[in-house]
Amino acid sequence: TINAIAWNPLERKLIDPLQGLRDLTAKCLRHCSPQFTEDPLRVLRGMQFISRFELQAAPETLELCKTLDQANLPEERIFEEWKKLILKGRQISAGLTFLAQTAWLRHYPELAALIGCEQEPKWHPEGDVWTHTGHCMDAFAKQRTGNPNEDLIVGFGVLCHDMGKPETSFKDEKGRIRSPKHDSVGVEIAERFLSRLTRQKRLIDAVLPLVREHMRPHDLFRAKASASAVRKLAQRVGRIDRLVRVANADRAGRPPLPAEDDGASQWLLDQAEQLKLADSAPKPIVQGRHLITLGAKPGKHFSKILKSCFDAQLDGDFEDESGGLAYARALLEKE
Image (tube, rainbow, N blue to C red; front, side):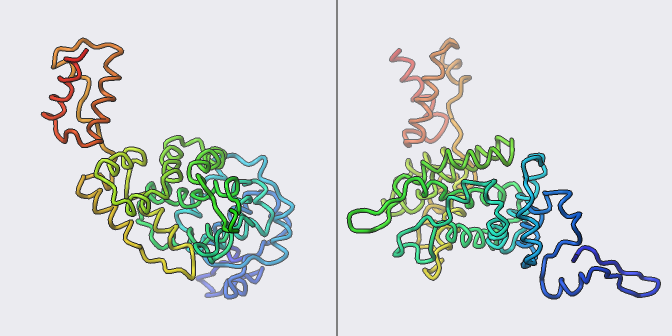
């Protein structure tokens, strides 16, 4: 109804047959007529509207949405609504709650599984993984950069980061809740979820490492890890700054615990800046053309030599082309 309003500039008169102004003032999202059911995508549109404009759905609209199904909706249309949620939502948790209220989480079992998945209260006083994820998404919404590609990757990274917890969580002998390896287990689950939303392989390939590595900023900080470890992390995730944003949203999603960085994120960013890896993955210094320059004949053995050179580069054995050539020459001499 809030979209079913018009203004007649000649008569200076508001045309509002469905009391949309009333609903707009009350921040109520209400369907106009039974014809709402003609396009089930309107449920997902409601999801992102609620998130963007901080609305509440009318009870009768919630009930009507429960009768609809997304089975026959084109993948592209579905993804566009999720994209708007991620890129434009201000209270993303409210949009996710709307999906739960309308029973549409049945289409997203990876998210549904988060409901009721308990967490250790000492570290997660906010409640279950579903509640935590909602808080994380709201924190993410406050720190978007305005770069649609980067925000979409990081947003989906935050949404998916704890999808491995339902499969890994248990209580130990002291009654504490543990979720070992939830980061690595969550990768396959997140891939299932994302693959049903989109066929954009580049997007999926950028999100999954953020799920796998979302614990690493704190781990590396605690261990005061070497430059080599930071290089290898950058190589795995593509961009350290993306990972830091996911980690920051994760930390902010545990109220009433403070959202401030414990030092890990800034430390990792500083390390990455020094290595010139904050917004890019390390690139191999030694290329096939270098091996040819050194007199080697192209062949299958090139890939093994180049991998050895890149591993050595990540370990810090050399940092420039001259060092790389010297390392490659030594490998060739051993053959």
